[in-house]
Image 1 (cartoon, rainbow, N blue to C red):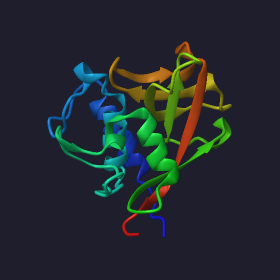
Image 2 (image 1 turned 90 degrees about the vertical axis):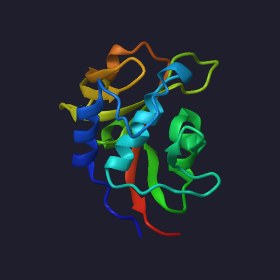
Image 3 (image 1 turned 135 degrees about the vertical axis):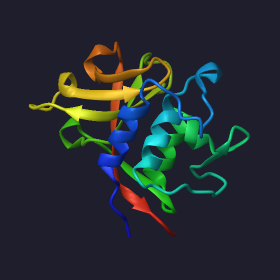
Image 4 (image 1 turned 30 degrees about the vertical axis):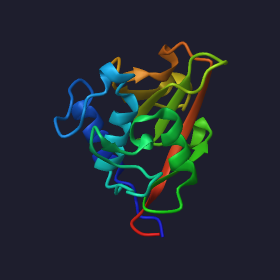
Length: 165
């Protein structure tokens, strides 16, 4: 059974911490970037419980965390394939994106997706120009996805979360 993701709480967390770092978590800016760590914190603030399985999604400290907590690639894999505890997502079209959902960007067609963002505002009609995000690494808030020079974008709709397998 999927429980409802608390989109309002997630977006409020993203707005509060977009230009700051929560001292409860490690700052990964100097270790490849903090974007996916920030997005994971947002999901957790949206009531998604951590998954402590070997290939789960969790953070306890810098030395005790799942790759999915801080890696664009592994977060995508976890969210879209998760059958256990924690958040669950589906890749969707732009028209299906909602507040609190995720956006991942690919800047170079020969490389993997490299940046994670959280949707904090949507204007209508829905378009890449009307999706506004928050992110870390290069900190942004209420920034248009269309402002990025990107080769590919994918949208991850958070369907909800599970509390048990």
